[in-house]
Length: 159
Image 1: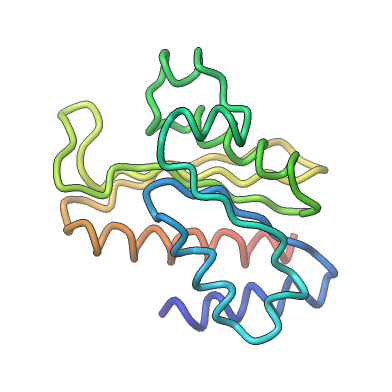
Image 2: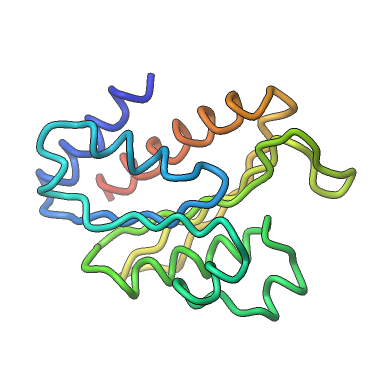
């Protein structure tokens, strides 16, 4: 499922002359790996940053400490700042960020399987969404998050 989505993204981005960057937390670089597995990805993929810690999110992507303190690392607000940061430090036209709780664990307020996504582009407001994949296991959450991210990027490459 992931390989065809990544290939579709690369095809669409190449056809429109778009470049893509990523800021990943809970997926740990799996989205970047899926994209770069596609032959010709170098024509569209600019950079991928794995910012697993809050300190890395702040230092590399410019996520504000206040945002993390107020909303937590797993929030649309942090995802939005991550995406904006990835766009700012790259030569990309589209930047996608992902942060979530792959598990095991979580809380009543932020359960296992909750993943926040944000898509930034230069010509539009940042688009954020949260998906509760459920307690499907760490690997399941990460795979589902990768597929969702690739679908979002492929759709954005058409817009």
